[in-house]
Amino acid sequence: MKSDFYHTPVLLAEVMEYLNVVTDGLYVDCTVGGGGHSRAILENGGRVVGIDRDKDAIAYALKYCKDFTDRFKTEISKFSNIISVVSKYTDLVDGVLMDLGVSSKMIDDPSRGFSYRSDGPLLMSMGGGVQTAFDVVNHEDTQELARIFRDYGEERKAGKIARAVVEARSSQPIRTTVQLADIIELAVGPRMPQKSKARVFQALRIHVNNELGELKDGLNGALGVLRPGGRLCVITYHSIEDRAVKYFMKNHADPCECPPGFPECTCGLKPDLKLVTRKAIKPTVREIESNPRSRSALLRVAEKVVVP
Ligand SMILES: C[S@@+](CC[C@H](N)C(=O)[O-])C[C@H]1O[C@@H](n2cnc3c(N)ncnc32)[C@H](O)[C@@H]1O
Image (cartoon, rainbow, N blue to C red; front, side, top):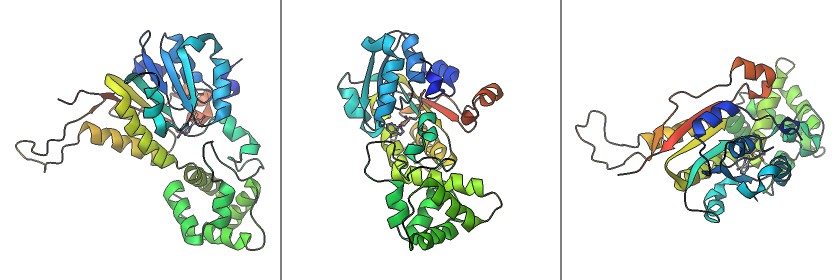
């Protein structure tokens, strides 16, 4: 069975370099997906606790990593629950990986409703939630829709698209991805409609799955379970999540709140992370050529330090 049938792992060599996998070390893969990164950790002698909110991903990864079942434990869960998942096995772990967003399998399956390129029901749920894109598109008011498109998609014509959605649904519910994509195209005009479609679909996906809330809780939880010297590796795919990761790492690496130029720190806040990558790591041209979906990936790495 080949992993890339499900998903090609992104920045694999770089993740393996920065995660510092040691034999029998315990690593949490918060986003198992097709199991590509998990398998590489297992092949390098590590043990993995794998989390994914999508039950299909866990089922696939278990098959893909079947040679390592004694060292690969999985949980269908959200990574915001990392502390309680890890507590079933140990107190502290040697590394945590988050490879955010959706898998290729999810995007390519029209029945999951993630893509505007193929027709399917407006779902966009990764798993473990009750809300769907159908609920949001058909029930939120114009103002809230515009906020979602702007805040989670950085879409400049958010208001115009929100009004078009509310107008369209007044005659009948918007049920499919292509129906929604056509409404967006009519609202923004024929110049560059793909970008607006991509931004609105990204916004709905982030909202439906509470991705930013998950990220905040997941990062804090990861910090709580990392042993001193353990590394946190996070791969993001768009600027909103990269900004959240960048500032999380920066604020924990330099939490001091004293005014600049103060002779001595009086706030008492000490770093609990050290930045390993000052700038985010990007895929090589070669990786982007062989896997175009990696083109927007950015990897940031930080290391837990002992608070004196
Ligand atoms: C980019 S894919 C990971 C691919 C994986 N690294 C591989 O090598 O195949 C992202 C995965 O994270 C999962 N995911 C996203 N947000 C999650 C969350 N908050 N909790 C748990 N899993 C999540 C998705 O269901 C998806 O399977």
